[in-house]
Length: 75
Image: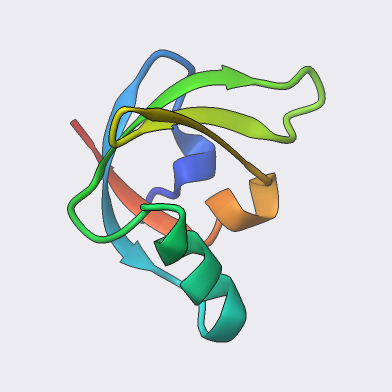
């Protein structure tokens, strides 16, 4: 399955599943990245870390390792 890390800049995707547990899963969910949420990838830093996203109308930066734990389906 495709992860958020694989989504190209300028593309949107919908969160399908979180592949993590414990504190990391709670942290990702607290940032608003829950099942069914639409995510737009705005920018990626030159070395690929972090990613800048638009989620639920606000800007969010997450690490590449966190993005790998989020399964998505492209819109």
